Amino acid sequence: CTLDSEVALRVGGDFFFDPQPGDSPVNLVLIAGGVGINPLFSILLHIADLHGYQEGKGNRHKLGTAKLYYSAKNTSELLFKRNILGLMKAFPGKITCCFHVTQQCSQICKELQPHITGK
Image (cartoon, rainbow, N blue to C red; front, side, top):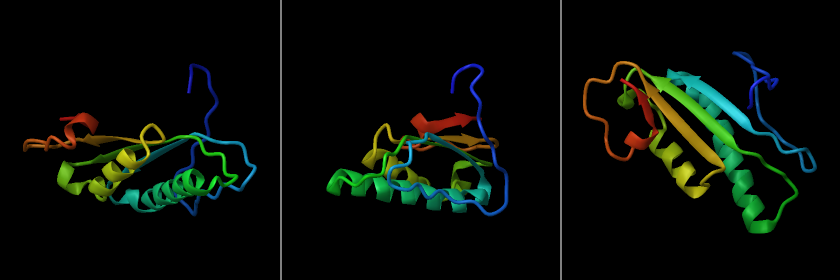
């Protein structure tokens, strides 16, 4: 987004991401805290499937980027972190993530360090 961009936010409830072939591409910003990652991780997996299908078979889906902001008390409470890192490696620039920890006391592993903000 740029300054003065209009964005839509949705909190809670039933939600999904199901782009149809021919839809204009959209860039997603997904924001999760703690176990709230569950439905958003499913959306990330769906996006990865569509990107993989798009690259392999040239489907008609036009996909934008997906940026995940995910916060937890510490890195041990970041669910699916290894899977998310794998998606970022598989689809560089298309799927990105920034983890935020609020009460980390121990050293953060090198694999996560480039993606962590907070204490």
